Amino acid sequence: MKRFLFLMSDTGGGHRAPAQAVGDELIRLYGAAAQVELCDVFVELGLWPFSQFPRLYPKMVRLHSVPWGISYRLTDHADFMQRASSLAWPYTSDSLRDLLRRHAPDVIVSFHPIPNYAILRAVRRMGLRAPVAIVATDLVSVHAGWFAPGAHSYYVPTADAKRRALRWHVPPDKVHVSGGMPVRRAFLEARQVTQAAARAQLGLPQELPVVLMVGGGDGMGPLEDVVRAVAARQPEAHLVAIAGRNGLLQQKLRSLDTPVPLWVEGFVHNMAVWMRAADLLVTKAGPNTLSEAFVSGLPVVIYSAILGQEEGNVVYVEENRLGVWAKGPERAAKTVMSLLGDRARCEEMAQRAITTVRPDVAELLARRLWQIGQERSSLAAFAEATAPWVREY
Image (cartoon, rainbow, N blue to C red; front, side):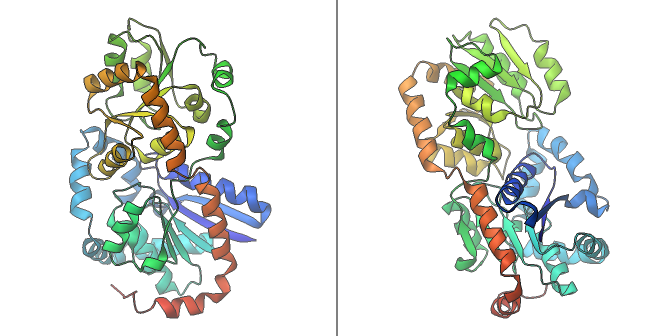
């Protein structure tokens, strides 16, 4: 049996979902031989202020993402991450060591950029033989924290992300472009279902196009205003808004007096079916939601992007002609109306999405992580080979 420790945090939905997707594939492929533990690293450390990160993140992002964008840019440098890790080490070292002892992993996999420098330092200081792999969960604007020196492998979704890794002096042979983000197998399986069948399963009408409006798993961004703006134009379409875990937003959406029918959902566990049933997705620029849409062959209209980490996603969508950047509610509503009247353009974007990204990235990563676990006995040679690049800091 191989024990895999997946480090992530509920700072937004973009870290847990990819980790779960890869973990599910490990179990599907290798059964009881693969033991996967998902760990919210900040919560499990139990140290202030790290333990508050999952609670504080949505509040920072809702302030028009300005505080988060500023902090992202200020910290997006390898030297800064090294110094910050060194300063925090006396405070965090005991908790990090305890965390690793409790889980006793054979392979450590990080799905979050912030803890990587500290985790790799702890592994070295403890003399652990567990290799560390890093799976970046940003499409383009990958933070320097993803590329802490000394990991066994770095997996990035795009060639643009690899160029960022090379900027921080990661050896090219250690950075692997996976061709997309890991998404749950349900999105692959939903591609085999007809749109009519998906609509029937959800109770949606068959005769009108479906516009699906979302704000990520936490219902962030100006989703309420976007829904108002789209509904005010009275499109000949069925409108669906998914509020995620944001209960207050769900209540507000349900209370809206819209001139056209509006279907409102909270957090759903069958997003793959909703995307298969839809003709158009209206969303913020979260990498996880965008990647699910790409795999589903669903054109996207992006109405907002978090400063720093999501800005590159907008460029990626536009350059690959996978959707439209329409910042703000009014521009988004205008774009929705335009695309509803241009089925050929929507179909072209849908086909480009299907051919641009790999749908089986979660399986690909699961197989590679399993191989890393199988190669664990040769880590002495690995450590010797990487020593010139890894320096103590």
